Length: 499
Image 1: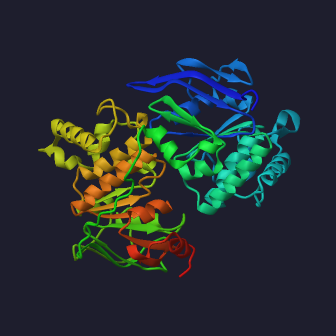
Image 2: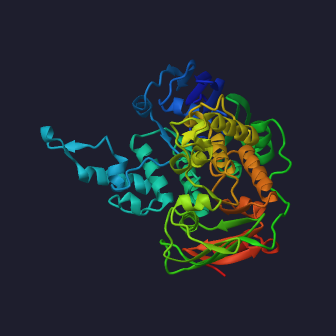
Image 3: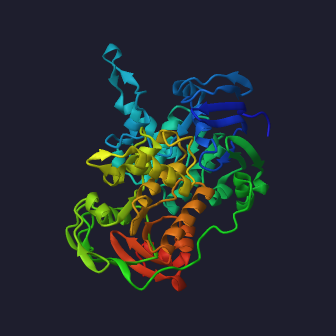
């Protein structure tokens, strides 16, 4: 394979209370797609941020084309041709594609006047878009693009700096199956042009499909490497967790005949032409399947009072209720885990303790004074129940791994003992072990009579977890499936508007 284009040797990095990386090594060759996998908290994101100059390592060294280098800033990484594409796209959606691609590096004309050379920006951007086989104008406003093409704009930004090393952090987490196929096609094309790609993902099926090699991290250390011929699901999981996961999805049924939640002709603001009708039973996991933009998130937000319904009726245990705000929903015993936990589910700068207890703060007051002993007791109890890995209840949320952040969001609602739990993509971006823990927790909740209404885009999860499936397409329910009707073909057909 020749000499590595990039070598990581004995990298160590420590944060308060956490040894994020411990003597990690990695090799990347020219024109190679290297997948880096591991549990949440294994150190993947920390390592990628070190390679992009966001963090500095405490120990170890980085070799670039055989020479020792120091990557002390993002600008240094850019000059070396290293570009990190974050999981959360970093685009200015009010600007067009060309402006985003050259943002902060605009070529200028007219000497001292330094006027931005729009013609050159559009011409150069168009050339990059052709290279990526993206069929749209460089003058297209980014917010008008589907998420898959926004991902291509991020790749175009990287190619505009002549990046020879692309680092992709969970690039398919928000993509449809078709968009994922398109992304993999582009990745293979870039590989054939000599670009090296580090691909970080929790979707092990996709890793098997696209990767040339796999490097596995566990607890901040190297766990093993797999060649192309060795890559399979079981090997990756065993290296990630040190054991085989025998039972991944739940198979028990706890649903009762009595609906805990009933929706009659509910008119969601985003799709006023399609009234929604559904029933959720006590002890049931009802999954909302559908493509991105099908209206699942909007329905959940309306049920939780984030958006006000235009019309219709919501019944709780057979009795009509009015939900005008999240406060009304919480009072009715409804909890909501949003799709974007970092933006809408947590206060990242605050402690674990605060995030767990904030929604139920009224429960821990006496004469309007907060009983901090109760607050700490509840937080410690939930940390123990959900096995949240944190050095202390005072740890800032932003220092926890994604899986543990998601557990804190769940802990916030479970501490209030909800009767209904709304989950929007609760396992997105989580590793296989964190997923297993979330599924086990869901099984425990439904066994206690909680009704769970959950949106999911992951087909294996939809088919493996659900008691029933409601498929949404363009704001309406296009089909309902009982377990004996479950099949990937049927679900995909309904998600695309079929019968």
